[in-house]
Every structure is written in C-alpha cells, then in structure tokens.
Length: 619
Image 1 (cartoon, helix red, strand yellow):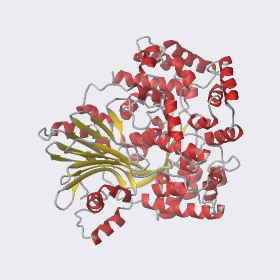
Image 2: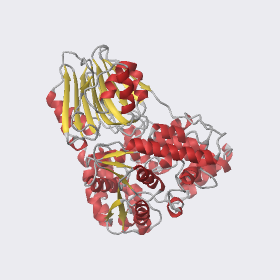
Image 3: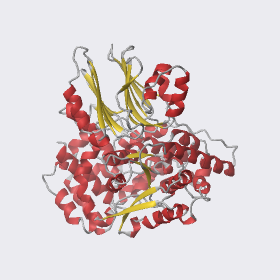
Image 4: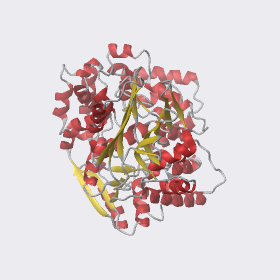
C-alpha cells in the first residue's frame, strides 16, 4: 500500500519542478512511511511513497520495463501477480524484482491499454509510455483505492489524495454541486469533488492522456452486471459461496509483513475471520472497537467469534471525548464527509497498526448480498405500490404539507409521492424538502436547479437488471460504498500507515454474487439469506441471525448530553462560515428538535458540524 502523485505539463519545454513533486509526496507520508521515489522525464513527473508489504527489499517504485520505455507507480495490491508473472516469463519478459507492481509494465508491453483487465486486486496507478507518448491513469474495479486529478489548460496533476493537489495548485474554486451532494447524501457523487477543477477517476475506468495533442479519454474497462443463474439450487449456491470465499481470502492473505483482521462481530467480518482461521497455521490477530452505550456496542459478539477461532484479540472502548479528533479527521478527508464512523474507524486502525501492517475487513457484504434493512423495507413497499398511479402520488404530495419536517414518516411519504422505485435513493442526510429550508437563498440560486437526488435517479435508471433489489445493490456499489464506506476506510487506515484489504469486494467474488438470483439474497424478509446459510457450518446462530447493528458513534445520546454545549458553541455562533451556505434558523431548529427528542437528528447535526470545521480550514 502506498501513495502516488504526478504532474504533467502540456508544454514539453516546461519541465516538472522536483520541489513541487516532493511537496506532494510529503503531504502523504503516512500512506508510505517506509520509502519514497521519483521519476522525472522533462514535462512528466511521478512521485511515490511506499508502505512495504510485498518484496520488502527490492520492490521500490517508480519501476520500469527492461529498456526504460515504460514507467509505472501504483498504490495497492495485485493478488494474482504471481500467476501473471509466470505467464509473462514464459513469453520472454525479464523481471528485476519480486514485487507485484512490476507485472504492470510487462503486462502493458504485452497487451497494451487492455492490460488492466488482467489485474485482480485493489489499485490506482499511473503509467508513462515514452514511445507512444502517453500517460495512463487507472483505478480498480470497485474503487477501493482512490485517485484524484486536477486539469486545466496548462497541466494535469494527480494524486491519491486531494491534499497533494492543493500543495501545488492554489486558489481552488468550490464546487457547489459537490457541496449539495454532501448535504444530501454525506459525500460527493460520481466524479465530482467539492472543488471545480478536481475530479475523481471513477472506479473501473482508465484515463489515457495523449501527450502530443493534450487530448484525454476516460473509458470504462469493467461493468458489473446482474446475470442470474436461475437453474442453480440453494444448496449449489451455498457450496459455490463457500469455495469462492475461502479462495478469495487466501489471495488477500498474501503478505511479507504481519497481518490481522477487523472484527465487529457482524456477519461479514466474522465470515472473513472464519475463512482466515481455516487457512492459517497460527492464531489470527483480531481487532474491535466498542462503546459504553449498549445499543452501539458489539464487543460481546466479537468476543464470541474470537473465542470460537482462538484469535489473538484486542479491543478498545470509545467515549464522547473521542470527538475531539474531529479537526484531524477533517484534515484526513480533504472534503466534507458526513459519516461519523470515520472516528471509530480511525481509532480501530490506530490500535490495529500497533500490532500488524495489514488488516482484512468485511466491508462490501451488505452491498453484494443485499444485507441492508433498507433493501427489505424498500422492496416490500415497491412490490405493494409498484403501480402507484400518478393521481395517488399527487395526493400523497399534497398531504405532505400537513406534517412538520421533523415528522418521522415524512421522508417516506415524500418518496412515495414520486415513484416507489425511487426508494432506492431514499437513504441520505437531508431530504429534498428539508434542504429547501436548510440552504440559504444565495447558495440555492448558485446551483442552477442541480439536484443530487436527480443525479442518483439518473444512475438508478441506467441499470437494466430488471430486478428492484439488484438495482438497490448496484446503486450502493456505485455510490454509497465507493464514496462513503471505502473512502472512510482508506483515509482512516492510511493515516495510520495500515493497509486494509476487502476480500468481499474482490471482483471475482462480486461477479459471482451478482449471478445469484435476488430471491436467494433477500428471502422472506431475511437479508443476506444465502450468504448466512453458507456460513452456518462456521459461525454460531447468534452471530448470523442477531439484529443488525451499524458501526457508528452514539451521537444521538452524546449530542443530548455530553456534547450538547459543544454543539451549540460551535454551530450557533453567528459568525460561523456555514451561514454563507445554510440558514441560521434552520440550524437552530435541527438542534432543538433533536434536544427535545422529537426526531433523531444526530446525523444532520454531525453533517453541519463537520462542514463547519472543514470551512474553517479551507476558506
């Protein structure tokens, strides 16, 4: 695991300043504290920070092919690199290291731009072909590893994090559409960021820059599709899942440094630990975070799993004072980021790094096996109201005016006033009718009728699966998972120089999961039905079939008690920069409604609080 950076000046006579490149890599030392490297070729410059995982002694980057005509830097891991290397050796290629990164240059020599389709792993890379005069940027299929780029008329700058780009490109203009995304869903959607000239390279895409013309093309190289194999029985799927899970976890355990696992005590992390234990000759090291508030505490379940598999277990209890780290978290995420579980994930990563360098997590299981409770609710309502006529939707819309915004069921009624399939876009922070009160007039006018909700609807309508539950999964895979969950884990772990791997998001396992008919995933109201059935021989019933808990801070209670004065002192200051975007009265109302217990607005308060802290550092 590492961090990458690059500067490309379109004027070939304008050489890259090595000082600027060093500023970029210095900004991400925690991603790669073990080593650094640079590649300078006139107007092209690559920078690299290394966290040594594979080939500790000779796997330095940047790395080239035999004649130095192709150079590459990569952040991530290629799990099938040994198989690729064996094939390339048989084709006459010569290797000088045992690293996984080196296979990229030789694979590119052999297969050209299509080489990325051969890779199995999590990665973000930059490749310079000096002969064909082009640079290729690429990102893994599920977006596990990040890659940002800045582009203007004179140059392109890229990096693993936005903070690198900000070191060399100043006076960046805010992107109000990205900020609206944040208030709507808690993160920026698709390729957008909160800055106009900085974008994310989408997962499963490559950007090819022609250095002669300055033209760039961004192309998708992989598409997740629903291809149900209806002829297979439940028992057959159970065996297929078991076999693929163990094969995938085995790939993800390749390491030349100590390795462990995050263990929440939920189904997904427990499944990963069970597979690891079956593949390891020594006890697995596991790590958990808990809270004094019983509603949020899963430590007793983590202990059950730890005891069953005889793991070397470490745990940590978080208290309200943990929120003091908010300023550091703001720095880590570069953009407004509303998922408060970033804090426990940070502390979990910090504790884990004291014992190992690599940890496996269970992220992705809910998205690929239909585990979220929202799928069950949305599917039920969609089936009941699939043909909800426009006149009925209109009546529901009129009825909305009868209820205050804090009425618990108003959000559901709002989406039913549209179309039932739009329930797939239901989960978020502020609903559209709430945003109309929250945002001030100047900010609203600047949006030119842009709607984050409509952006998600467009994504939803692009899916052709013909299956509602699958569409819900696909939407979360392409939005919530990549821009919230994976973003959270990447920044929190890399801030602590910890590599986190996500075997449930191995693309081969994901493709397998999307061959399973949705009736086996969500069955009789049971989410992840077939995945749980496949684990019954490994995990206790109380782990598989207990009530699902999310990995989140107990903010609802904390904001009413321990942190009440903190919230008010921060957000009710009339000089707060947030009031350039949102309405002071609306903020007061959100805080008051939460304090009275009329509605749990802790997520909304956190969203405003994080934005406030972000503005202080980025204005």
